[in-house]
Image (cartoon, rainbow, N blue to C red; front, side):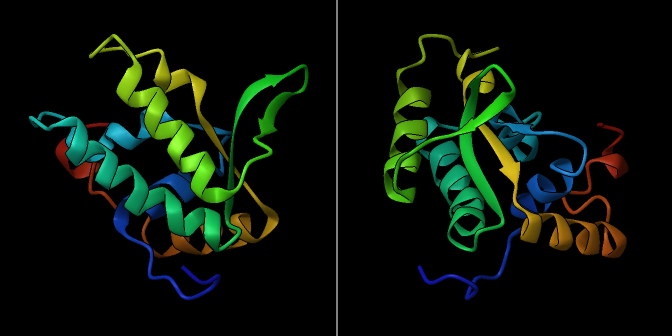
Length: 135
């Protein structure tokens, strides 16, 4: 995937907009699955489709909250970061309230913040969650 060549899906836009408030826990990736049955493979496919373009386009970085200051970006390549996040998800023994939700985070870059503000102005709810009464 080449930087700047991507069309963002609704979940990617949702993650960017969420990043305007704070770091975004990977648990936010469950948003399109609320009230639906899904497999781990379906979830991983959705996760990668949403997060990969954000990372490759330099809009967000992936990491954890292990720094005394909070967010710490992983010192891994993008493919290795995605593989690490996927392995953490697949190996989490819980199926609800997974610890994985809180172990992997995204943080906006300056370019991501600019785009997120623009996206918010265009459509603050790209997944249509508020229309369903879910916040």
